[in-house]
Length: 286
Image (cartoon, rainbow, N blue to C red):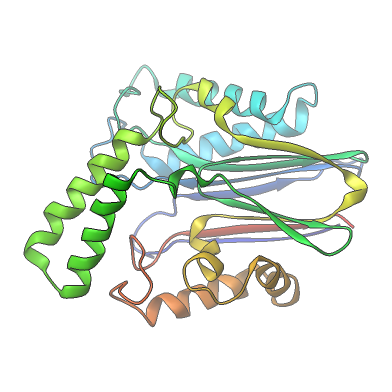
């Protein structure tokens, strides 16, 4: 079994809000992978004294421990328990009902000699390479399928940025952020979901199970690393996995950074920020 993983902040002056880790038991028969992408708040006011990096480290560590030790629980149940444990760690000091309370996207996978389980919540990605070499992305597309009025606000932000209209840009961006925040973890099921303080959100994750014999490799990516395919269109998912396998996880991040730097104003390739935290983990099972 081969494991290759890396993570890098988008801005060296700010803490990395991504988390990635893999656990391999002494038996050698199985393992668990957890990757989180912390949601960067538009302002520092998140109702929490600890911040997003603290949250992703706590939630990620709890999820990894539960995924590896509690084989009697599904990955969704592990995530619910990890969210509850993390919330309990700061509910007495922080306002967990705050709309910007620390939260994260989640990718998790677990395997043994018989099966491979997976879970994806929000816009990080999991690539599954089959025994025939075909690469299948496991994605939660709810964040990209925004209602038309919200997409219109997003398009206005990009149009103002492209036109260099700095005076109106801040107000347009704030309106878009408010609209997106109104859809995050909406109780009526019309929005998209991230792991925050409510364990029930784990039930909204995309989950599945495959026979171990049908899976050759797994590759988990935060959206900052997945930009190679989804934003800059430098290759398809199969090409991305092939690049990581041949050149290493760090090579993918380096390619993304080069593409980001070539479009510093985010005009040619629309995105929310010039550089984003990036994390990925490759687990070759066969």
